[in-house]
Length: 160
Image 1 (cartoon, rainbow, N blue to C red):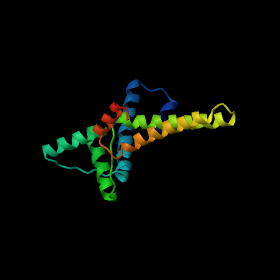
Image 2 (image 1 turned 45 degrees about the vertical axis):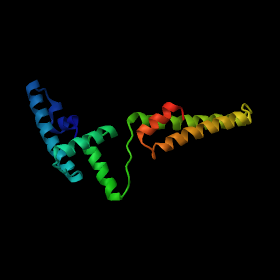
Image 3 (image 1 turned 30 degrees about the vertical axis):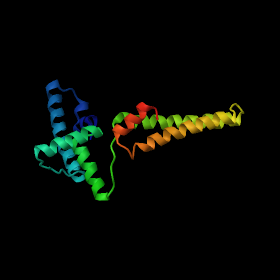
Image 4 (image 1 turned 180 degrees about the vertical axis):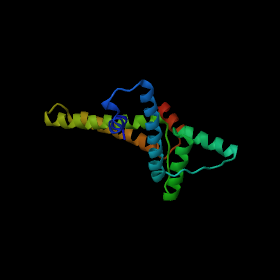
């Protein structure tokens, strides 16, 4: 229930009230709202507490930080991946954003190629060059799933 609905149901909008009365009602409304919220949340979410030795917590914290996640998020994803027997690969946010941008660039190149062919603006060699460049970029991005980040950074610096 929203605050305005609460005011209407309580009849407060029909007559004048002091600010103290409104503040007291708002406090009461917040208490009731929080109580209802907690009841709904308990039906949807269960909390799990885990105790770890300091060394394991440091290790998890480092892994979570490298993945760009909080420790609880990292544990939840890792546990679910373990349950599904899948491998979860984490990349820094910059690499994820790079992948999104490259996909957008690829879509734009494909659109340009289609329109260029339709209106005869592009030569066959130009289209082939664009497609080759896009394939090289895609291969580099696919390599992120099979090589370490250090190897990838070295490959990028070397211009591969």
